Image (cartoon, rainbow, N blue to C red; front, side):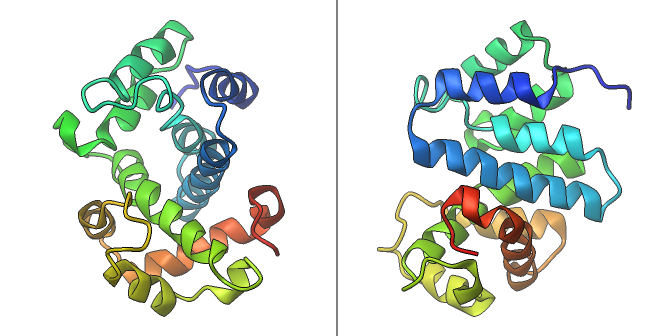
Length: 190
């Protein structure tokens, strides 16, 4: 695929312009790391996958409502020169948009968004806030606790990993390993 989008630096500036919450900025960085790892695993374009991960929620603070989130952001991304493939993948991660997820890029962002956030949440309640303290079994146990990280849509988590054709356990391990090199930046002790 020929590159038809701005560089990561422009994407990062756009994310920072629209997102002020440090936790949301870290979420974008975390999902970017997971998406890049997924691209490497499947010999796909890591820059493309990374941009989708970084920008998937960039408009959330300004447009949090279903029907606006990713729709308004998509318009902004197109105005800034981001390719349709990026906009469609970002829009596809919101179930209510009704888009099919036909590519690994689209299935990947759907699978990675909620579950990456959940893995981070589990890490932050560990005594040392370290990814080394997190296991697939501890994440699965917390997923069953409806009171923990209530904002995480469990149905999206389960459907996301199913769409990738992997087990929940395997994708949790994949996410943990993808985040470890970025632990310091993400506030997750190495």
